[in-house]
Amino acid sequence: MNKVLLTSAAIVAIAGGITANMYFSSDSITAQQVERSVPEQTVVKDKGSYRLFEPAKKLPKFELQRSGIEGFTEQDLIGKWTFVSFGYTYCPDICPTTLTRIKAVYPQLKNIAAVQVIFVSADPLRDDVERLAQYVNFFDSSFLGLTANHDKLFPFAQSLFLPYGIIATKKSDDYQVNHSASIALINPQGKLHAQFKPVHQVGEVPIVDMKVMADSFADIVATSDGA
Image (cartoon, rainbow, N blue to C red; front, side):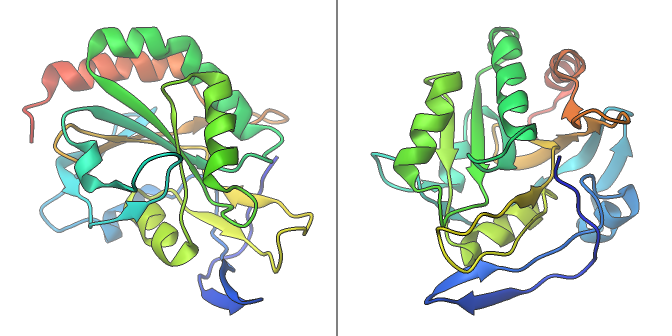
């Protein structure tokens, strides 16, 4: 299970490429940390299993890589509700469990509204776009696998309050990536609308309760004003 202990952030250049050297305090950022980071006009409402941003938070421009076609940008968020999780293909627990359980509720999510599921790798050294596509397609052929160098990836993660931490100097290193188990929800206008929080139980992998997420998503869509 991935655990994170320290609080600081830096991006350093190692071995001819940009490698992240980052730490954060916990899997789930505290409400106080989120509130300090959102625009003044945005209110963060704690709904128990998720945080709701009112009005939804505008995201900065970004460009991530994906297999087979041109990059994925903020324009690719328009017109669909987007569920975003961070991780890496070598993850032993959180990532495969999360994607398996999203797959189980995916039909329900699609019945509620037009949706897309994105898995972002925080391990671009080992997860090239071809490997990433093969990984996510194992769970569902419509899931998208994205990544980028850390200079582009880390700001995107920060904008969604989905922190990650990695120390790696070369591709062959045997290392783990510390990452959030939360799932961000971006609305059809390309704005951060909500963040679903994982359930923490002693001895268990922290995973979002997918049934609760699906039920909450139905409520969010029903009450959304499209902003």
